[in-house]
Image 1 (cartoon, each protein chain N blue to C red):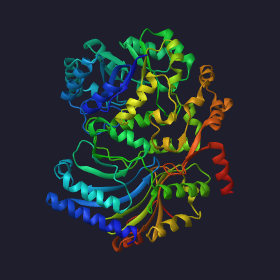
Image 2: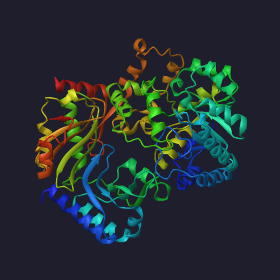
Image 3: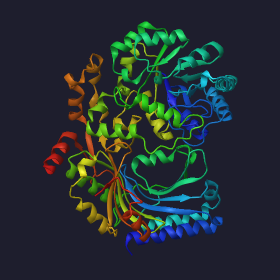
Image 4: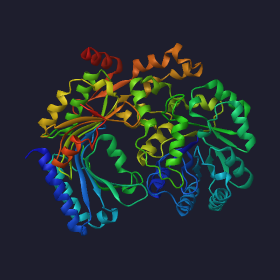
Amino acid sequence: MELCVPHPGHFEALKEIVKNGKNINEIYMAGCPDFIGTVRRILDSSPTIEDIKEQTEYVHEHGIKMNILSNSSCLSGQHLTYQGNKTYRWYLDKLNDIGVDAITVSDPYLVEMISREYDIEPVVSCIAFVDSPQKAEYFEEFGATTLTLDTNIGKHFDLLEGIREATSCKLRIMVNEGCLYRCPFRYSHFNLTSHFFGPGSTLDIMGDYYHDKCVSMRIDNPEHIMRSGWVRPEDISAYEKIGIDLFKIAGRIQSVNWIINCTNAYANRSFDGNLMDILDGTGTLRNLFYVPNKELDGAIEKWKVCDKLCHKCNFCKELTNRVVRVYSGKGTQGEQVIPINSLKSEISNETA
Amino acid sequence: MKLPDTLLKNRLDIEKGINSLIGGGVSVYQLMLSSTSCGCVGLTLFPVGLKREDVEVFNDMLLPQLKEISKGVGVFPGAIVIQTRADDSEIAKVKIQRLCKSCKIDYKGAEGKPWPGVYTLQYNPTDDYQPNDNDFLVYRSEIEGKIRKMSGKLVNVEELGVFVLSCGCSGFLAALSGLKAGDITGKDLSFFKKMSSDLGIEPKIMYAALSYGTDCVSSITSKNTCSICKVKYEKGVILPDLVL
């Protein structure tokens, strides 16, 4: 199994990840937000060209590839302006000279440009939302050789198999994103963060509506956690069997040790603990819900044939009610995890 | 001395201590003693004008003061951490924490830089959990349980704490998720007021903040306002989202 592993951006982190992480085929990190942004927060010390050069050399010494993210969902049309295009080319020239192996992009224009003009592999980002054989074919025509599939289809085996048949591109899936299935905020949120963390950002927002709504919805209906497109470490082999080539770990704004532990859980194909602890995008929900990963053994067999008509099926809802627990008194001597149904029933009786 | 008075004194002492070391220009506009839902307990300073370089240079003199203050309010200083603002060396927070199991692992990594912009100045966690008089973990758990029972919702109290501000206000705050405005409007929140009073904060005003654009409650606060802020609330210069 080959893993594509996140890197927060500072060299100290990279050294520890390379030293302690298993099965790492590729490291990915944000590029310089002054040129092309990404959709995630760049925590202080945004990497400079020099940083990228130094770190690329380092990973190459360890037989690992370097992938630079430039996957804003909105480029503000800069790529189609004279000045913007010149800036992009200058930046891509630099990355080419440095010897980065791949650039992850979401805009088809950049896929074409990189594939035609550079010795760098254009990797299509999950933010291009490749969720069908047809879309996979389009991107292959544009010159892509690797596709990161839309996280919404992580449990759609029919679509995954269809895409595998339709394209000769390498396929990678993001295994541990904990976002809402068919999230209504996804495009808007990515556009917000693209502008927020992109070149020349001056946004001073009053709050992250999308994030706060998402958290609230998952607390109101915890089955959303179960429906999400994540893949358990134990279930990786089911994806290898249908021809998925590479598994991408999400989490470059997590701590270095979190990244290492998560990477190794997937490398070991086993994790005995709270699934929330290895999912990205769950934030403080991991201090509310305890999802015993081992108790989800076998659920993949249902998901393999699932038609995603949740309102009729209720499998994920029933699974949630059966296995998910809620923390009470976390961190105290009286800490316990209570079955979600028991707690709901207890507190609703009190309210009544 | 009541906890808010202790914290007000601590805030002033720290501010003076820092300014005497670096020659002035720093304000510690907030000091908060809190626990979080992961299981950490700590003191957090919110400074303005303090640079990472300042702390690095005066580390040896500053850290003992922070540890002393931390122990004085019952927090074992297992880690002292600074967090800078994005792309800047200006410090946004200084945290002195007794770390939970999970954060012990998080804060250990990458040569004292567990995340970019986060610098662990000291890492000396203890394995012993010893409840004490200011056990905010127990308070957090109690408040969470009571809000769950009041609302019938799976509420997560992400942080519970007592804070003091440089203006002289003090307050009791629960930052949370899982609660809607309709879940608390008109409800009996006497348990919150009581804990606030027990911790020495007279709840002169109590309000909820809503996440922007939503009806999701992001925090509940009871505040003992200073004379200036009292007028601001009365005149509507400060308008809380939901007065309780």
